Length: 191
Image (cartoon, rainbow, N blue to C red; front, side, top):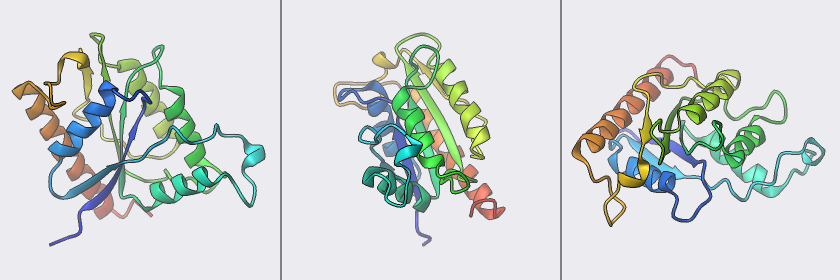
């Protein structure tokens, strides 16, 4: 049996009871057995400042860069703040993209799921994140798109997805993501 794909999950919310944190855990539980997903904490990363990116950068940056570099793929699960990506997630992108020419994101397959209590499901954050990922050369899953509106009503008391149709959609999304990662890997597009 092949070793499962090593997938980092980045959650764009720091709130302890975050709906997107719950969503990330649900996605992990719905993923096919060909994937091993782990949430990588990003709240401890100091804001990117090139003055600190010396021969001895902050230890949290180094650990984060090494963890992402070792991954086969990245799953982004994010809310929307002011029609864009939360600062903590943008900072993680910036930390991983530096120093110039040594980005850990380059050619690493990715996918985005956005969730919001509002009706449009984090559409703005999802698309702003896609813009950054294009520049960072992250081959990002295009379809199905995953914008989950009314995310505050998706979970039961145990934090599991309550509705069958949502669960089936997310299972299908995760299987398609696994297929996407395999496709990118088989094409040799990832270093």
